[in-house]
Length: 185
Image (cartoon, rainbow, N blue to C red; front, top):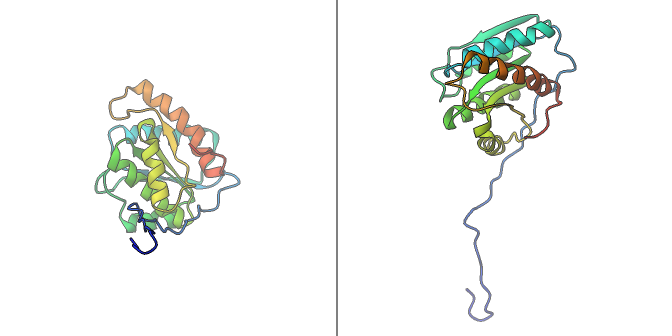
């Protein structure tokens, strides 16, 4: 406080976040003939949902190849940089899952951002319970325009019929993400 002028200086304790916005990779005009990567974070039912989604997508889209990656060290860790590089070098688009809890959701989004940074359109799958966390994560790491695929929560304890219901949603929304047609959630 400056006593002679009765002027107070107020500081905002929240500070300022100075992030450079990261751009999405170029969206695809068509999915025909592309190489699809499936990045499985080893959550319960992730394999069933991802393989079911790849099969469902392959019925309508002729991919040149579908590559599966399941060697993450755990669902609450980011994919190793070597794996991210391999996916980026050997694929054109990626479907990654599953974000259905706090840490696995953040890691799923960070994996997608790492691939987007390398020019690979990524469709990360999250559940309805973690839409807000996903939005915060995307903003915090500088890629607010990344659009996730959103399926019903939970995932780990669902039946085979519920897996099929989620696969239908993924089939539709993943294509929208890769083609740049998915709206903000």
